[in-house]
Length: 152
Image (cartoon, rainbow, N blue to C red; front, top):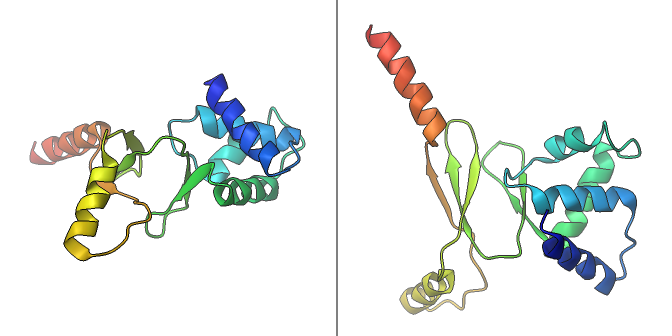
């Protein structure tokens, strides 16, 4: 775990005078350490066996709180359940259209894209949520295999 990232997130809770419960800590630790952009259900399933005092409602309540405080981002993709991302470093996402896997891409100058948008449109930008869609390497291989089998 990135202990510094976890401590930074706890500091946000303390600054906002939020009680730091064991359940809240468990959800936060999972999010800080996750690279998979879990859903609320995945978070609950990851914690329920090791953390007996947690419910799906507790997970949702903490996710809402963390989102409100700017600790996490909620990622929504059509009718799919929301995914959650610890969001302390600006980045964008690549989303697999087949399996739904989400991967972070760290681009050094996302602010440049915002400045370009301001110049072209006259808008004052307030942030961004860039998503690129495609097929992950695993799904590419799976689909190529299915096509190969269909041809045989």
